[in-house]
Length: 367
Ligand SMILES: NC(=O)c1ccc[n+]([C@@H]2O[C@H](COP(=O)([O-])OP(=O)(O)OC[C@H]3O[C@@H](n4cnc5c(N)ncnc54)[C@H](O)[C@@H]3O)[C@@H](O)[C@H]2O)c1
Image (cartoon, rainbow, N blue to C red):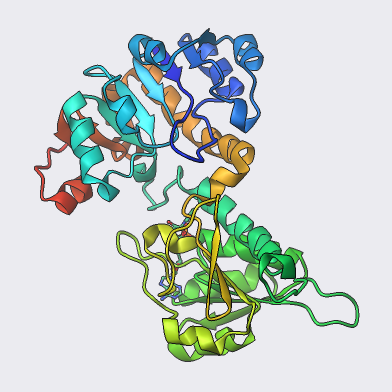
């Protein structure tokens, strides 16, 4: 198969769909790979590294689209890219169609076969191509939170780990899933006092075990949330109710209960956020302050650490990309249910039910 990858053009997207080591893997399996010149530069991969790995370097995006059977990307195609696809071409990327009707309609017209990273789902309900990004966002939430707690960045001037003789900072994490657990690891590692709240008692039991009792776990209810609001220097929003908007666990009036200069990092912003005052921000201007509480609500946090994020993402996508290249999409999907669930678009039909339901469009079961 002819595989191709291009430079991402969405604002502040620095990741790339294929690394030089992915190129090597495709070439070793008998495929050819073309890469747009400069595609990996923002993630620290040079054109020379791609050439050495066996890729053909191509000057413009159009040529990569023209010659590839499968395009491997990171973000959903931008309107400027829609016209570059040809019918029957495979697109392997994050699509997030349910978020945008115009994108869905635009891509349906192209007649491509769109495989979305975010809907590839294994039998046990895991989303293997979303997990590395949640791990990154969780870890980064503490790094960013610690920075914005510094006085020059608007915070109350608290060092999370304290020092001998001076009390440690207090971190509360709403939601103990992938993001929450990774946030807890970083916060605990920095020496902060950590409390994690969840509605799933089994999850709290698990967290209590893996942290060997070194962090506090609390059932997530209004009384316990109020308690942590009073105490916290840094509050992390990390709840998820699959397929639904995140619940507003902290109301606007609750901000008054927090200390002046405390920081909220609402990682769940991409699902609407779990703090009422959350609104999406960008890496250009990541924070805003309401009632003396600094809010950090960047919707694509992993973009800030493009190299780590590219390496994490491509390690997870490569296995599925190779399946498609080796067997063809149809045969690979017949043999692998998780991959089949990734197919959102197929030759002009919408093949993922939740997306079709969102827009009241026709749904066609795939293959
Ligand atoms: N901003 C970003 O860049 C970025 C990056 C990655 C993930 N995310 C988002 O982070 C959020 C969390 O993702 P995840 O992978 O950790 O999900 P997850 O499913 O692994 O964990 C979510 C947890 O929230 C818990 N929960 C549900 N309702 C709750 C409540 N009322 N109180 C407390 N806990 C509750 C669940 O029991 C679960 O343990 C998602 O919205 C995801 O889209 C954002």
